[in-house]
Image (cartoon, rainbow, N blue to C red; front, side, top):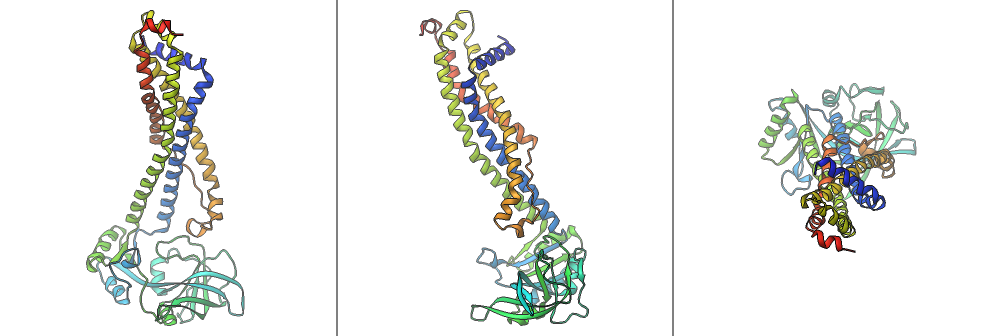
Length: 415
Protein backbone atom coordinates (compact mmCIF):
# COMPACT_ATOMS: atom_id res chain seq x y z
CA UNK A 1 0.00 0.00 0.00
CA UNK A 2 1.28 3.44 -0.87
CA UNK A 3 2.44 5.82 1.84
CA UNK A 4 -0.24 8.37 0.93
CA UNK A 5 -2.95 5.72 1.36
CA UNK A 6 -1.52 4.64 4.73
CA UNK A 7 -1.40 8.23 5.98
CA UNK A 8 -4.96 8.78 4.77
CA UNK A 9 -6.26 5.74 6.68
CA UNK A 10 -4.32 6.79 9.78
CA UNK A 11 -5.80 10.29 9.63
CA UNK A 12 -9.33 8.88 9.15
CA UNK A 13 -8.96 6.58 12.17
CA UNK A 14 -7.71 9.46 14.31
CA UNK A 15 -10.65 11.68 13.30
CA UNK A 16 -13.10 8.93 14.27
CA UNK A 17 -11.64 8.99 17.79
CA UNK A 18 -11.22 12.73 18.25
CA UNK A 19 -11.53 12.81 22.04
CA UNK A 20 -9.00 10.03 22.57
CA UNK A 21 -6.67 11.54 19.99
CA UNK A 22 -6.88 14.91 21.71
CA UNK A 23 -6.09 13.44 25.13
CA UNK A 24 -3.15 11.52 23.71
CA UNK A 25 -1.83 14.60 21.92
CA UNK A 26 -2.20 16.66 25.11
CA UNK A 27 0.78 14.94 26.68
CA UNK A 28 2.94 15.69 23.64
CA UNK A 29 1.72 19.30 23.60
CA UNK A 30 2.54 19.87 27.27
CA UNK A 31 5.95 18.26 26.98
CA UNK A 32 6.96 20.23 23.88
CA UNK A 33 5.48 23.43 25.32
CA UNK A 34 7.60 23.13 28.47
CA UNK A 35 10.72 22.26 26.49
CA UNK A 36 10.34 25.07 23.97
CA UNK A 37 9.43 27.74 26.53
CA UNK A 38 12.43 26.94 28.70
CA UNK A 39 14.76 26.78 25.72
CA UNK A 40 13.45 30.06 24.25
CA UNK A 41 13.67 31.87 27.59
CA UNK A 42 17.13 30.47 28.27
CA UNK A 43 18.42 31.54 24.87
CA UNK A 44 16.82 34.97 25.24
CA UNK A 45 18.30 35.43 28.71
CA UNK A 46 21.74 34.41 27.47
CA UNK A 47 21.60 36.88 24.59
CA UNK A 48 20.32 39.68 26.86
CA UNK A 49 23.08 39.14 29.42
CA UNK A 50 25.74 38.80 26.71
CA UNK A 51 24.56 42.04 25.09
CA UNK A 52 24.72 43.87 28.41
CA UNK A 53 28.15 42.48 29.13
CA UNK A 54 29.39 43.54 25.72
CA UNK A 55 28.06 47.02 26.41
CA UNK A 56 29.59 47.12 29.89
CA UNK A 57 32.95 45.51 29.27
CA UNK A 58 35.57 47.37 27.32
CA UNK A 59 37.61 45.08 25.02
CA UNK A 60 40.83 46.95 25.89
CA UNK A 61 40.34 46.89 29.67
CA UNK A 62 41.23 43.94 31.88
CA UNK A 63 40.90 43.57 35.65
CA UNK A 64 43.43 42.09 38.08
CA UNK A 65 42.07 40.76 41.39
CA UNK A 66 43.51 38.89 44.39
CA UNK A 67 43.00 35.22 43.59
CA UNK A 68 42.19 34.12 47.14
CA UNK A 69 39.27 36.54 47.33
CA UNK A 70 37.29 34.51 44.83
CA UNK A 71 36.45 31.09 46.27
CA UNK A 72 40.03 29.84 46.25
CA UNK A 73 42.54 29.13 49.01
CA UNK A 74 45.59 29.93 46.92
CA UNK A 75 47.08 33.10 45.51
CA UNK A 76 47.51 36.61 46.87
CA UNK A 77 45.22 37.68 49.72
CA UNK A 78 45.56 41.29 48.60
CA UNK A 79 47.30 43.52 46.09
CA UNK A 80 49.55 46.51 46.70
CA UNK A 81 50.63 49.61 44.81
CA UNK A 82 53.81 47.76 43.87
CA UNK A 83 51.82 45.29 41.73
CA UNK A 84 50.12 48.22 39.99
CA UNK A 85 53.49 49.83 39.27
CA UNK A 86 54.94 46.56 37.94
CA UNK A 87 51.95 45.97 35.68
CA UNK A 88 52.11 49.54 34.36
CA UNK A 89 55.63 48.82 33.11
CA UNK A 90 54.64 45.70 31.16
CA UNK A 91 54.67 45.69 27.39
CA UNK A 92 51.31 46.53 25.84
CA UNK A 93 49.95 48.26 28.98
CA UNK A 94 48.84 51.87 28.61
CA UNK A 95 47.48 52.58 32.11
CA UNK A 96 47.26 50.57 35.35
CA UNK A 97 44.88 52.02 37.95
CA UNK A 98 44.71 50.56 41.50
CA UNK A 99 41.37 50.96 43.25
CA UNK A 100 39.85 50.38 46.68
CA UNK A 101 36.16 49.63 47.05
CA UNK A 102 34.10 50.08 50.22
CA UNK A 103 30.47 50.44 51.16
CA UNK A 104 29.08 53.76 52.37
CA UNK A 105 25.92 55.69 53.16
CA UNK A 106 25.88 59.19 51.70
CA UNK A 107 23.92 62.19 53.00
CA UNK A 108 24.18 65.98 53.23
CA UNK A 109 26.31 67.40 56.00
CA UNK A 110 23.42 69.31 57.55
CA UNK A 111 20.61 66.94 56.61
CA UNK A 112 20.53 63.19 57.01
CA UNK A 113 16.87 62.75 56.13
CA UNK A 114 17.75 61.85 52.54
CA UNK A 115 20.49 59.25 52.47
CA UNK A 116 21.63 56.84 49.75
CA UNK A 117 23.64 53.62 49.97
CA UNK A 118 26.52 53.82 47.50
CA UNK A 119 29.95 52.37 46.84
CA UNK A 120 33.03 54.29 47.86
CA UNK A 121 35.79 53.87 45.28
CA UNK A 122 39.28 55.19 45.88
CA UNK A 123 41.04 55.87 42.57
CA UNK A 124 43.43 58.19 40.83
CA UNK A 125 41.24 60.71 39.01
CA UNK A 126 43.75 61.25 36.21
CA UNK A 127 43.96 57.51 35.47
CA UNK A 128 40.20 57.22 35.84
CA UNK A 129 39.84 59.82 33.09
CA UNK A 130 42.41 58.03 30.91
CA UNK A 131 40.63 54.70 31.17
CA UNK A 132 36.95 55.68 31.24
CA UNK A 133 37.09 59.21 29.86
CA UNK A 134 34.99 58.34 26.82
CA UNK A 135 32.18 57.20 29.13
CA UNK A 136 32.41 59.84 31.85
CA UNK A 137 30.01 62.61 30.92
CA UNK A 138 29.13 65.11 33.61
CA UNK A 139 25.53 66.12 34.18
CA UNK A 140 26.78 68.76 36.63
CA UNK A 141 30.24 70.12 37.44
CA UNK A 142 33.35 68.31 36.29
CA UNK A 143 36.71 66.87 37.32
CA UNK A 144 38.28 68.67 40.31
CA UNK A 145 41.28 70.78 39.34
CA UNK A 146 43.44 70.62 41.30
CA UNK A 147 42.44 67.41 43.09
CA UNK A 148 42.14 67.92 46.83
CA UNK A 149 41.84 65.31 49.53
CA UNK A 150 38.14 66.03 50.09
CA UNK A 151 37.24 66.13 46.38
CA UNK A 152 34.68 63.61 45.18
CA UNK A 153 32.82 62.65 42.01
CA UNK A 154 29.38 61.09 42.32
CA UNK A 155 28.07 58.57 39.81
CA UNK A 156 24.53 58.63 38.52
CA UNK A 157 21.76 58.25 41.10
CA UNK A 158 18.10 57.83 40.32
CA UNK A 159 17.42 59.85 43.48
CA UNK A 160 18.28 63.54 42.79
CA UNK A 161 19.40 64.29 46.33
CA UNK A 162 22.79 65.78 45.50
CA UNK A 163 24.26 68.43 43.21
CA UNK A 164 27.71 69.63 42.20
CA UNK A 165 29.25 71.78 44.93
CA UNK A 166 27.33 70.11 47.78
CA UNK A 167 29.08 69.22 51.03
CA UNK A 168 28.26 65.58 51.73
CA UNK A 169 29.13 63.19 54.52
CA UNK A 170 29.98 59.57 53.88
CA UNK A 171 29.37 56.99 56.60
CA UNK A 172 32.04 54.46 55.60
CA UNK A 173 32.18 50.85 56.72
CA UNK A 174 35.66 49.34 57.03
CA UNK A 175 37.53 46.57 58.83
CA UNK A 176 39.92 47.70 61.55
CA UNK A 177 43.30 46.23 62.53
CA UNK A 178 41.73 43.67 64.86
CA UNK A 179 39.42 42.39 62.15
CA UNK A 180 36.29 44.08 63.47
CA UNK A 181 33.93 46.29 61.46
CA UNK A 182 33.74 50.01 62.19
CA UNK A 183 32.08 53.09 60.75
CA UNK A 184 33.85 56.37 60.15
CA UNK A 185 32.39 59.64 58.87
CA UNK A 186 34.18 61.82 56.35
CA UNK A 187 33.11 64.99 54.59
CA UNK A 188 33.60 65.53 50.84
CA UNK A 189 32.86 68.24 48.32
CA UNK A 190 31.14 67.04 45.17
CA UNK A 191 33.00 68.48 42.20
CA UNK A 192 30.76 66.77 39.65
CA UNK A 193 27.76 64.49 39.10
CA UNK A 194 28.04 61.94 36.29
CA UNK A 195 25.40 61.01 33.76
CA UNK A 196 24.15 57.43 33.70
CA UNK A 197 26.82 55.08 32.37
CA UNK A 198 25.46 51.63 33.14
CA UNK A 199 27.61 48.65 33.95
CA UNK A 200 31.29 49.07 33.18
CA UNK A 201 33.35 45.97 33.85
CA UNK A 202 34.94 45.74 37.29
CA UNK A 203 34.26 49.40 38.11
CA UNK A 204 30.59 50.14 38.85
CA UNK A 205 30.48 53.82 37.88
CA UNK A 206 26.80 54.43 38.54
CA UNK A 207 25.83 54.77 42.20
CA UNK A 208 29.46 55.17 43.26
CA UNK A 209 31.32 57.93 45.07
CA UNK A 210 34.84 58.38 43.67
CA UNK A 211 37.45 59.87 45.99
CA UNK A 212 41.27 60.10 45.73
CA UNK A 213 42.98 56.78 46.44
CA UNK A 214 45.28 58.39 49.03
CA UNK A 215 42.27 59.75 50.93
CA UNK A 216 40.56 56.36 50.88
CA UNK A 217 43.70 54.69 52.28
CA UNK A 218 44.07 57.31 55.01
CA UNK A 219 40.46 57.06 56.15
CA UNK A 220 40.72 53.42 57.13
CA UNK A 221 44.50 53.18 57.44
CA UNK A 222 44.62 50.48 54.78
CA UNK A 223 47.08 50.47 51.89
CA UNK A 224 46.07 47.22 50.26
CA UNK A 225 44.39 47.30 46.86
CA UNK A 226 41.15 45.53 45.96
CA UNK A 227 41.73 45.51 42.19
CA UNK A 228 43.89 46.91 39.43
CA UNK A 229 42.17 48.14 36.27
CA UNK A 230 44.47 47.80 33.26
CA UNK A 231 43.99 49.45 29.90
CA UNK A 232 45.97 47.89 27.07
CA UNK A 233 47.26 49.74 24.06
CA UNK A 234 45.24 47.64 21.63
CA UNK A 235 42.21 45.35 22.27
CA UNK A 236 43.93 42.55 20.36
CA UNK A 237 46.66 42.54 23.02
CA UNK A 238 44.26 41.92 25.94
CA UNK A 239 44.75 38.16 25.99
CA UNK A 240 48.53 38.37 25.69
CA UNK A 241 48.83 41.00 28.43
CA UNK A 242 46.56 38.98 30.70
CA UNK A 243 48.69 35.88 30.22
CA UNK A 244 51.86 37.90 30.84
CA UNK A 245 50.42 39.11 34.16
CA UNK A 246 49.47 35.57 35.18
CA UNK A 247 52.94 34.29 34.31
CA UNK A 248 54.66 37.17 36.11
CA UNK A 249 52.77 36.44 39.35
CA UNK A 250 52.78 32.64 38.90
CA UNK A 251 48.98 32.54 38.70
CA UNK A 252 48.64 34.08 42.17
CA UNK A 253 46.27 36.71 40.77
CA UNK A 254 43.01 36.43 38.89
CA UNK A 255 42.96 38.28 35.56
CA UNK A 256 39.58 38.92 33.94
CA UNK A 257 39.53 39.44 30.18
CA UNK A 258 36.13 40.56 28.79
CA UNK A 259 36.08 38.15 25.84
CA UNK A 260 37.05 35.21 28.04
CA UNK A 261 34.46 36.13 30.67
CA UNK A 262 31.73 36.26 28.05
CA UNK A 263 32.81 32.92 26.55
CA UNK A 264 32.81 31.32 30.00
CA UNK A 265 29.37 32.69 30.86
CA UNK A 266 28.05 31.58 27.49
CA UNK A 267 29.25 28.05 28.17
CA UNK A 268 27.63 28.09 31.62
CA UNK A 269 24.33 29.32 30.17
CA UNK A 270 24.42 26.55 27.56
CA UNK A 271 24.90 23.89 30.26
CA UNK A 272 22.11 25.33 32.43
CA UNK A 273 19.77 25.59 29.46
CA UNK A 274 20.51 22.02 28.40
CA UNK A 275 19.87 20.81 31.96
CA UNK A 276 16.52 22.61 32.17
CA UNK A 277 15.45 21.35 28.75
CA UNK A 278 16.38 17.81 29.79
CA UNK A 279 14.17 18.14 32.88
CA UNK A 280 11.29 19.50 30.80
CA UNK A 281 11.73 16.61 28.35
CA UNK A 282 10.70 14.18 31.08
CA UNK A 283 7.15 15.32 30.35
CA UNK A 284 7.60 13.90 26.84
CA UNK A 285 8.51 10.52 28.28
CA UNK A 286 5.30 10.61 30.31
CA UNK A 287 3.47 11.47 27.11
CA UNK A 288 5.16 8.51 25.43
CA UNK A 289 3.86 6.13 28.08
CA UNK A 290 0.40 7.56 27.49
CA UNK A 291 0.75 6.88 23.75
CA UNK A 292 1.84 3.30 24.53
CA UNK A 293 -1.24 2.70 26.68
CA UNK A 294 -3.64 4.30 24.22
CA UNK A 295 -2.19 2.36 21.29
CA UNK A 296 -2.46 -0.93 23.16
CA UNK A 297 -6.11 -0.21 23.90
CA UNK A 298 -6.60 0.80 20.26
CA UNK A 299 -5.16 -2.49 19.07
CA UNK A 300 -7.61 -4.41 21.24
CA UNK A 301 -10.57 -2.33 20.05
CA UNK A 302 -9.59 -2.62 16.39
CA UNK A 303 -8.76 -6.32 16.39
CA UNK A 304 -11.65 -7.21 14.08
CA UNK A 305 -10.76 -4.28 11.80
CA UNK A 306 -7.17 -5.56 11.58
CA UNK A 307 -8.48 -9.05 10.81
CA UNK A 308 -10.62 -7.70 7.97
CA UNK A 309 -7.67 -5.76 6.55
CA UNK A 310 -5.51 -8.88 6.55
CA UNK A 311 -8.30 -11.01 5.09
CA UNK A 312 -8.53 -8.54 2.22
CA UNK A 313 -4.83 -8.93 1.52
CA UNK A 314 -3.18 -6.30 3.69
CA UNK A 315 0.34 -7.29 4.70
CA UNK A 316 1.64 -7.24 8.25
CA UNK A 317 3.96 -4.35 7.47
CA UNK A 318 0.99 -2.36 6.14
CA UNK A 319 -0.75 -2.71 9.50
CA UNK A 320 2.52 -1.87 11.26
CA UNK A 321 3.03 1.27 9.17
CA UNK A 322 -0.57 2.38 9.69
CA UNK A 323 -0.22 2.41 13.48
CA UNK A 324 3.17 4.05 13.26
CA UNK A 325 1.70 6.62 10.86
CA UNK A 326 -0.98 7.47 13.43
CA UNK A 327 1.69 7.95 16.07
CA UNK A 328 3.80 10.08 13.73
CA UNK A 329 0.85 12.33 12.84
CA UNK A 330 0.02 12.59 16.54
CA UNK A 331 3.57 13.62 17.37
CA UNK A 332 3.79 16.04 14.46
CA UNK A 333 0.57 17.86 15.25
CA UNK A 334 1.20 17.80 19.00
CA UNK A 335 4.69 19.10 18.39
CA UNK A 336 3.49 21.99 16.22
CA UNK A 337 0.84 23.03 18.74
CA UNK A 338 3.29 22.62 21.63
CA UNK A 339 5.92 24.76 19.90
CA UNK A 340 3.40 27.53 19.30
CA UNK A 341 2.06 27.45 22.86
CA UNK A 342 5.58 27.18 24.25
CA UNK A 343 6.71 30.32 22.48
CA UNK A 344 3.57 32.17 23.61
CA UNK A 345 4.21 31.08 27.21
CA UNK A 346 7.85 32.19 26.94
CA UNK A 347 6.73 35.55 25.56
CA UNK A 348 4.31 36.11 28.45
CA UNK A 349 6.94 35.16 31.02
CA UNK A 350 9.43 37.43 29.26
CA UNK A 351 7.02 40.35 29.59
CA UNK A 352 6.73 39.63 33.31
CA UNK A 353 10.52 39.59 33.76
CA UNK A 354 10.86 43.36 34.52
CA UNK A 355 8.26 43.04 37.28
CA UNK A 356 10.05 40.02 38.70
CA UNK A 357 13.38 41.86 38.65
CA UNK A 358 11.76 44.81 40.41
CA UNK A 359 10.01 42.61 42.99
CA UNK A 360 13.27 40.84 43.85
CA UNK A 361 15.20 44.12 44.02
CA UNK A 362 17.65 43.09 41.29
CA UNK A 363 17.66 46.37 39.36
CA UNK A 364 21.28 46.88 40.36
CA UNK A 365 22.27 43.71 38.51
CA UNK A 366 19.94 43.71 35.51
CA UNK A 367 19.13 47.41 35.30
CA UNK A 368 15.81 49.21 35.43
CA UNK A 369 15.05 48.45 31.77
CA UNK A 370 15.55 44.70 31.74
CA UNK A 371 13.53 43.01 29.01
CA UNK A 372 13.60 39.33 28.24
CA UNK A 373 12.70 38.45 24.65
CA UNK A 374 12.40 34.70 23.99
CA UNK A 375 14.45 33.39 21.09
CA UNK A 376 13.21 30.37 19.14
CA UNK A 377 15.90 29.32 16.70
CA UNK A 378 15.19 27.18 13.66
CA UNK A 379 17.38 24.49 15.20
CA UNK A 380 15.24 24.41 18.36
CA UNK A 381 12.05 24.33 16.27
CA UNK A 382 13.20 21.40 14.15
CA UNK A 383 14.64 19.51 17.11
CA UNK A 384 11.45 19.86 19.17
CA UNK A 385 9.29 18.76 16.25
CA UNK A 386 11.52 15.80 15.41
CA UNK A 387 11.77 14.82 19.08
CA UNK A 388 7.97 14.78 19.40
CA UNK A 389 7.62 12.57 16.32
CA UNK A 390 10.42 10.20 17.35
CA UNK A 391 9.07 9.79 20.90
CA UNK A 392 5.60 9.05 19.53
CA UNK A 393 6.91 6.46 17.07
CA UNK A 394 9.16 4.75 19.59
CA UNK A 395 6.41 4.29 22.17
CA UNK A 396 3.95 3.18 19.47
CA UNK A 397 6.34 0.60 18.05
CA UNK A 398 5.38 -2.22 20.44
CA UNK A 399 1.58 -1.84 19.96
CA UNK A 400 2.10 -1.55 16.19
CA UNK A 401 4.16 -4.75 16.07
CA UNK A 402 1.54 -6.48 18.19
CA UNK A 403 -1.19 -5.41 15.75
CA UNK A 404 0.89 -6.52 12.75
CA UNK A 405 1.39 -10.01 14.21
CA UNK A 406 -2.30 -10.67 14.86
CA UNK A 407 -3.59 -13.85 13.22
CA UNK A 408 -6.36 -12.81 10.79
CA UNK A 409 -8.62 -15.81 11.65
CA UNK A 410 -8.46 -15.15 15.39
CA UNK A 411 -8.82 -11.46 14.80
CA UNK A 412 -12.08 -11.97 12.86
CA UNK A 413 -13.46 -14.10 15.72
CA UNK A 414 -12.51 -11.47 18.32
CA UNK A 415 -15.50 -9.93 20.12
